[in-house]
Length: 127
Length: 244
Length: 119
Image (cartoon, rainbow over all chains, first blue to last red; front, side, top):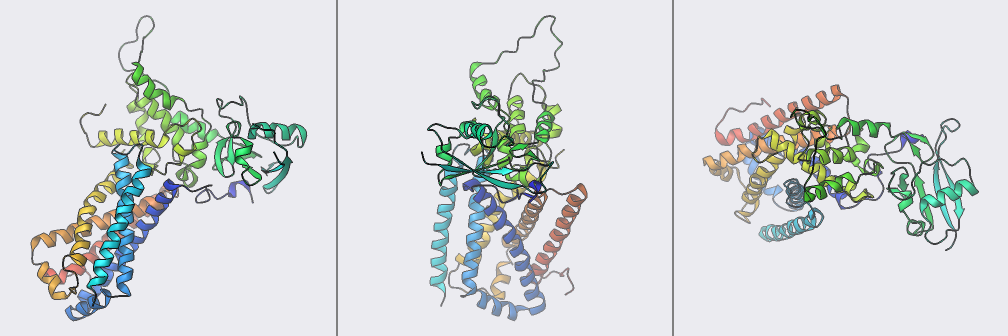
């Protein structure tokens, strides 16, 4: 290996919270952007090309397992991205200068609770 | 203490095509620092080993290197602490061209530092006939003295993932220095620094990974200082009141 | 100047608005009426109300901008040439317009509009 070939993008020694949350924010953001295209494309295809009957039939399939589990996974990704994003914005507003590390858990924790509660409600609603 | 291994990054551009790691065995005395161990190694085992050091007490900032993958000062790191599993791995700072072994070329670092004009730029008032008194209240001095503690060791550059990806980014130490003068009520140089700071490769490249703050051997909260610069510039763009 | 600031600032501004818009979207789709299946007719009935139309248009614009502006930042952080940066910016604009048109296309039948994309 030439010295200048050392990987400096991800191979950066030990990872701590700041690095994980940064990579997590990037990864979930890119994932959600990809999903956005998929979401809009499918709905556009179904409403335009398929019409009302296809739309309702597809909605019935997508609102049950196994797609419902995927949907919950999506909500988990959204909740993480939102909770961590709120933490970064609070830091930037100088409202968490010393506590941004703890704030991560205080925001992501309740987001996880919301996910569990929401998931339970959704799964209970499926007949 | 038992014998331990030093695994050291070796590269001599005049002889080597590739970098390699060389193992050395030492029996450390209690209280031995990584820097002292390196000095001993060079004197007793391998005179060709290259590293940079000067004051040996964490003031000159010369001996920053990767110790077990993290950027630290060799003189402020105890061998006993670093040799958790019996091996201490030493590598040159990440993100800088390697000159030889543990010595890197920091030209880029110094060039970035100068770009933020890290000196007091006085206001337009006429030059006094004798000397100019520029005193600072004690409390404000305390706030700024933290940012003045920087010893330019470049640990924060080696740890910053943005620097690792994007070499044009000004980087933590230069921005900390910029903050030290931007926050100084005696300074009137904001307009002159703005071109460097208010730029995609200036303050806006920071995404708050906090590795600079964690790595700083002088415990400067670099991430916070960069955030302060972002806030000042944002207030200026949005023409918010109460902005200095 | 402002080349660094505006993408940074708008990312945060859209983020705060999305907390409300996306929160409302997820709530309406999943929890406003638990156990009830979404049908074309229900969606159309909801979209007869201007508040829901505003919610969907706003959400569409915000989420497309936030997603592509964020993706652009992530790519530019890799360090590109000025020409590469311009190319990425234009690619983001083109993808953004495309995504927005897809969204208009999805909403059009519910709103009795002419759809923009001839499939």
